[in-house]
Length: 247
Ligand code: OAD
Ligand code: ZN
Image (cartoon, rainbow, N blue to C red; front, side, top):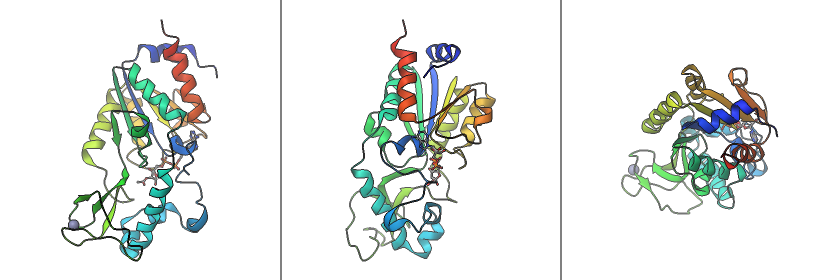
């Protein structure tokens, strides 16, 4: 792919870059995005109908099982070339912040260091009553495991629809978006707030906004550069063009 020379030179000069990723960044690792239909057992449910406090209150076992199934699916999954390109970008840029909506932990697995997980992490579990985190829980398939301290039902440490984001992570993400010179929006449909507003915050503060997505999104008309395609293909090429050929 040919990248515009002015983008290449802006990136070479930038020392403050922020990146937001969504489910599309993990698609080439074999994970379905949120708005794709699901397969197998779960095909009749929409993720948006399972990822909510109301769904958990109505049928905790259903919601627990869905996350347990996704946790299993993620175990065999590896980062893709897009994840590794972001690790390389971090090593080239003085102040680099990665903000992700993904709960799969693949950025950390790949080696990214400064990460803000806005929607939590599926591999962490906490009590729905007292909030205590736990590393170990029973595999009893009959019922949802309970908290050793208060007996409350355990739940994944992810953000559900209608819940607020972890405050520290969100604050750090907003700060990075406001301070960066270049903001990347990668593989996210940009329809879930507040994550979707970060690119606009960066744009309003004068940052260049670069979008990489398989399709156009509500952000596309505002983006300074839009590259349509797969992040696992475009990102390594871009990192190569900008930083490998520098000097
Ligand atoms: P979505 O599933 O909404 O969007 C995935 C985006 O990735 C779409 O815009 C696709 O066009 C794009 N895409 C797919 N494959 C791609 C690829 N290989 N390379 C580049 N782009 C690709 O996922 P998110 O935007 O992450 O929230 O969804 C945001 C949030 O909504 C999720 O974190 C989750 C969900 O409900 C919570 O659970 C709170
Ligand atoms: Zn508890």
